Image (cartoon, rainbow, N blue to C red; front, side):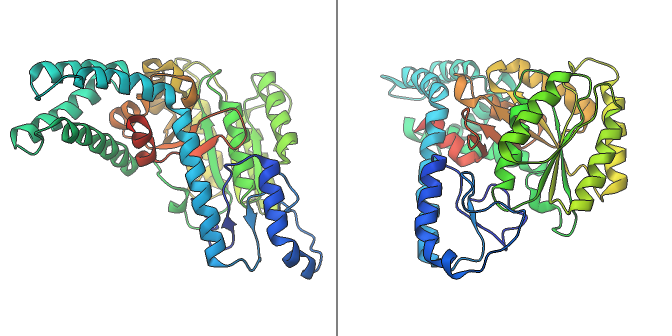
Amino acid sequence: MPFWRRKKDEFVSLGLSRAASERASEIQTETKTELEKQPAQVSDKPSLSSPWQTSVLGLDLSIEQLQAQEAALEQELSARFRRAVAATRESLSERIDTVFAGAKKIDVELLDELEEALIAADIGVPTTMHVLETVRRGISRKEIDDIEKLKQAIKSELIAILHASEQGGVASETSVPDNIAPYVMMIVGVNGVGKTTTIGKLAQRIKAEGNDVLICAADTFRAAASDQLAIWAERTGVPLIQQKQGTDPAAVLFDSMKAAKARGSDVLIVDTAGRLHNKSNLMAELEKMKRVAGREVEGAPHETLLVVDAVTGQNGLEQARQFLKVAGVTGIVLTKLDGTAKGGIAVAIAKELGLPIRYAGIGEQVDDLVVFDPEQYVNSLFN
């Protein structure tokens, strides 16, 4: 599945799920003949020699080759995702297996123990109550009459919750017509959750599929934020618009919008101040920035993504609630999913906030930011 899908008719995605050198080598080997036949072209799009390049433009690869490559990458991505949520899976599965061990029937005691197991995985009390209420209805209707059906019912309900959240916020960049550009993504979140890293990874992955990307460093209150973004910009080859510390963030955004339109950028990613969520001027600043963006491009910002650290669990959920009040959040980026035994927070966020989980961080490498897939996530937790 492509990471970024607004230009799916022009680019063939080969994914980003293997070591860069291995991918580059394989792509170059498979396309050497085709490239030798083509005249040199001048373009600011990524070249095939780039270690992060994952799209092939204008190459005559067979459908079978592309399907085989995509299938292999999807399989590897699934394996990496399973490894990333291993801590959560071991915690949840161990608890559930303990609950089910020796159980011959579904009774009140078993359901009470199951409730404790789900809450311990940070799925949250309200979400756990909802899941178990659905399970109890199935039991009363004789639809759930053994342990395996009970497990399947829990999985199905968790997947249903995650899919239902896609009805709120923005579930896909394809909801915005291709002729509207740049696509503006505003990134919000408290300091320390991985916001800057997320912006760098987003920029690289979107660029790697053939898009022109620009980063706006609108967190002008913290010098370290611009410095970190500058490092990511240099590393990924994505242009960065920044001004001196203390500049009005809306002014930086205005300049960035003008620059993005002038260069024909496809995507503009906007960093914002990572203040604590209880600072009163956060809403005023974000609203001003949104007005500036909306005047320059229809519907901008098209997404406002809140970065949440999965390790913080229920505290992260409370942060999300507060930002939802002031920032008009449309989706969640869940970072450090590989570093916690309580990754059930994804379900809690989806259920309690009605917001889709757009992306998940599953490691430190640039390609360890993936599009969140509900089925893959739930299956990885239980299988």
